[in-house]
Image 1: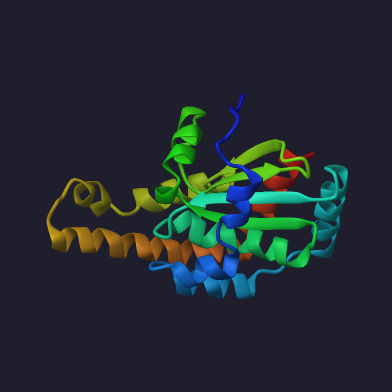
Image 2: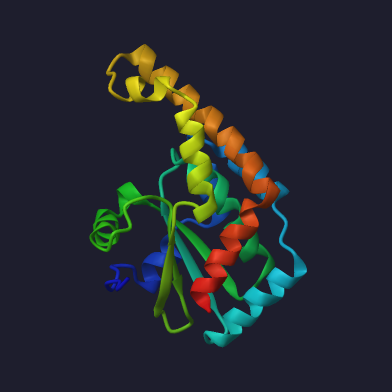
Length: 200
C-alpha cells in the first residue's frame, strides 16, 4: 500500500509524549497499561534483531503512536513498544493523542489507516519506513469471536440510554482484561514480529 507523506515532523515527534508522560495523562486504562509495561519482557534474540535493524537504518529508529487513552488495543499493545524503546537505546518512542493532531488523523485515514493505534516507523533521516495498525493479525479472530459471544453488544451500540452506555463500557472493559492475558501469553511476540518484518 502506498503511503503519503505525513504532517509529522521531527519537531512534532520530539514534542509528543514520552511513555511515562502518556501514562500519567491517561484517564482510562492507566492501571492496566502500567501493569502490562511492568510485566513486558523481550527475548534477547528479539532485542538483537531490533538493534541490528536500527543499525541498518542509520543507527536510529523513531516510532510514533497515534492513539487515544480510551483505546483498548492501545492499552495492551503499546506497553511492549515502550519496553522495546526502554531497552534498546537506538529506538525512540513517542505517543501522539489523536484529537490534538486532526491533520495527522486525516492523513492516516486517507491512506486507509482508520483504526488506532497507528505506529509510524522512521529511520535516522526521518524517512517513513512503514506503518503498523491496531493489533496483530491473529488477534483479529480472537476479538471477533469474543464479541460474537456477547450478544448484548449489538443492541447496546444502538442505545443512547446512559445506563446501557455504561453497560457497554463495562463489557468492553472485560475485553481489555482478557486481551491483556492474550498479549502476556504470546501476542506481544507477534506485535514485535510484525513490526520487525516492516523494518526488514
